Image (cartoon, rainbow, N blue to C red):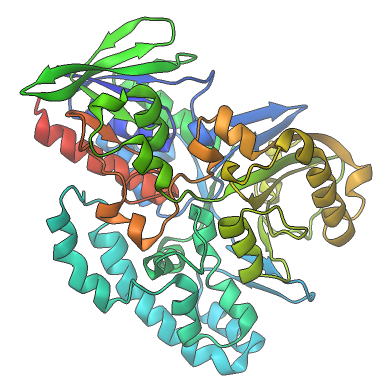
Length: 496
């Protein structure tokens, strides 16, 4: 069997490892931290369980495919349950809007919120269906390794008006300014600014409608644990607490070829191929010497645009808040201006928007009896801002907590049972994300498909990438799709 080393145990690494092991490769998964998961790490604290990263599961069939490849059924390992409503969006003026996968129900809510927008909404959905068919069904698991690959789909992308932004696309059909926010915020879930992200990402709303929004009982960490178990059951090996220092290279017809990895301990693990689920920019910058990188140079990587970062508050309460939904999006009065501050000016503004996750709305076991579990995620500038989070974290935390106490969680400050904070500095250090970006490269048209770092390295033979920083991009469906691409490429280039 040919040996493949997988660096990193996020969803992309686990999915790649299972797929390749199921195809007969000798697979060893190497993780720097003490537990599997990467950004889907799990913190357990004072009886509360906090998913550190992804909390929204869409397109569950992608998970089914991975388990099926290993001869298993997802339902034998983890229980996925639908979330209804998908989200509740709260506005600054006290109004709110929520929606689910029931088309008639959502149309009724649109008509009640803004009667003049119902037909425009229907027309928007018709157009997102075409974008979804091309952008997700046809292109998400297709590698873009040559510019000609991009040229082949360019006419379709132009026809779908992918040069527009998501907000511009939505605004063509929906006139109410608040509903425009409802149907354009989705790029933020994958690190994009709706005013800059290509309209291809409007497909996220249709993807939700197609397969629903789900939650894994026990948290997203339950999926990670299940995937780790399956990998070991089919003969894959997992090594934790083993940071990789560099990717080993050997010359092959004048081109460097990956032939294993060197750990921080100095140990060498030989392999015929290496798959990196680590941050793409830092894989190149830290694990491959500059003289071996003609395309992915430090200068090129530094000039690319990176997503915003995140300030995350995990906290548990001694009381429950039964009126709060599982997923709540709290939008600031400023929309475009706030995002401009975060993405372009890289300022820490006085206001903020929040994604508030309450898993105990669906799964009481995530907290002790009579308690609630929360995760407040706030988009903030990445580390290119120069913000010193060692001094800013506490006052920013206090502002967020007071806001939640005053507006949505009465008595919060008197009922805190436990809390922890994760800042852009932690993204940069603990997660080794370049510039502390929450989602790697910003999903601009100029950084998508062929323009995004490729799933197969242009510089190093037999080095492959799965995860948010490569095609098709961030988000659990995108990352799982990248693993499908890696499987195809490895099997094509290194048949067993």
